[in-house]
Length: 199
Length: 93
Image (cartoon, rainbow over all chains, first blue to last red; front, side):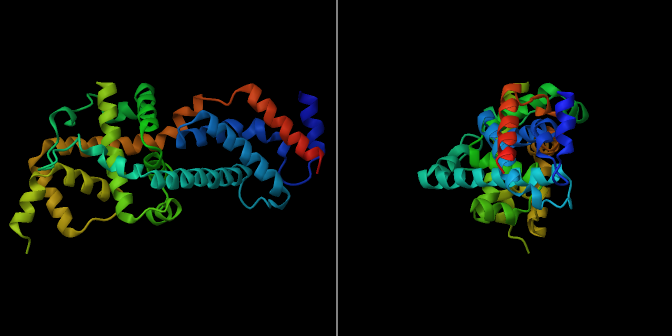
């Protein structure tokens, strides 16, 4: 293994050496995809597609950014493509409407009060502890995976990738009011799921 | 001037208050909405709890990538397959 790797590096053709990509970046890219998409299989496929797309253009890679940043950018575009196709699929099936009904249980239809069984209660865990608590993180991830995929897309693009609201609306073809409704409902659902599974 | 009837509706409406809490965290809400929210939160400890937990969830989501599924690694046989595909591609080009 050792000798193969060093032999390979003698044949380096550019600033980037594709023979080493899997060892250096596969786990990182997989984790990056997995937290944004609720399917291990799809995340795996996207890592492969990223490498294949990168192979087509690595000779043009000029090292203006690091190799890792460059590969991550390719993967990000692929994830947005997935979001987009899922989003349009949702719109067609009319399940955007279904998801609009998903908070009717949380608040009273008439006056907007919290319904008893969904009323927020303290998690009973200090802020700092929660941030470092692996079990809590696992529950959050599991709760995220339960969200409708268009909600998960909006949530991760905003809260994990820190994308601008305009960019998210544009790439997912959402109106700004749809965007805010999704942001709100995703959070209300996530919070309730955390409470149910933690306390 | 703010219409007192409007104030009443937000003062008791947790759905609207939580919507404004979310909007305020990542975007802008108007001065009027800020005031409405402030009034609501002054009288609603449940939504105060919601707000704290909402912020915590945002922070945790940000941390997820660095500390969460990093433990989940791509399995070795899939990596082997990937290496082979890349090597093939390089050999043929």
